[in-house]
Amino acid sequence: MGSSAIIVIPCYNEAARLPAHRFKAFACARHAIQFLFVDDGSSDGTWPVLEGFHREAPQRFAACRLAVNVGKAEAVRQGVLHAFEAGPDYVGYWDADLATPLEAITAFCELLDTRLDLEMVFGARVRLLGRTIERSALRHYLGRCFATAASLTLGLRIYDTQCGAKLFRTSPVVQALFQHPFATRWLGDIEMLARLIQARRGTDLPQAEDIVYEFPLPEWREVVGSKVKARDFVKGLCGLARIYWQYLR
Image 1 (cartoon, helix red, strand yellow):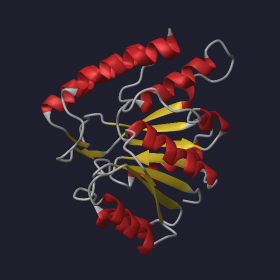
Image 2 (cartoon, rainbow, N blue to C red):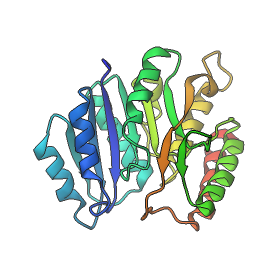
Image 3 (cartoon, rainbow, N blue to C red):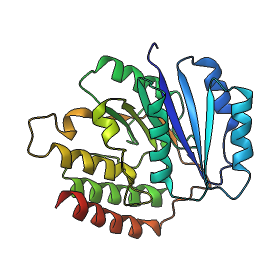
Image 4 (tube, helix red, strand yellow):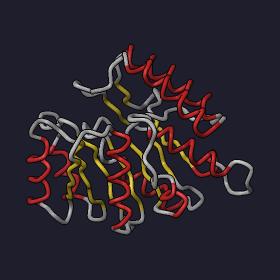
């Protein structure tokens, strides 16, 4: 793969969960992909772990530390803006627990290499025969309900907005979506799409459904210890309402 990519990894109290060996093994096998870890004001030993990554392989791993916990959306946004400054072909973000294997990054990059009409690739957790999508029944059904609500809010036929595996072309179109702080702490993915829809509404420019590609993941495994709880479903619905009134009404 000839294209360069920087993958942002938001981390909050991940010292005991971060699969360091998987990151290091992948980095040794891939030459054009770098990682930027963002410590979102962790209160455990996350930062020393991330510093260790950088000391061991500074050409592969970078790390930045936020003074206070600002939530995943803002941690990702700040990391993505920092990554843009380095000038790679692609910038993305990935959940730190690697529920989505890192090998999918290569497939995402190859898709953007060949589909020049696309600006974004989103991982999608679709339970198809021949694919390994492992998720508890409760989280699966709550997730499907929320995904349906998100699709209706956006007016966009998107299957999975919240999968933590995304890659973007570093175009002016994409960079503009990250310039201002998000209004929600956890729904930056949806808010970013709402900004795109708002910016393109009533224009002759390609619409969101023309430049976003959902990639059915061959493998995704729920990892014990996720910070997203069932009660967050209600908070998420409130966040959707906020996004609708701010961008789409």
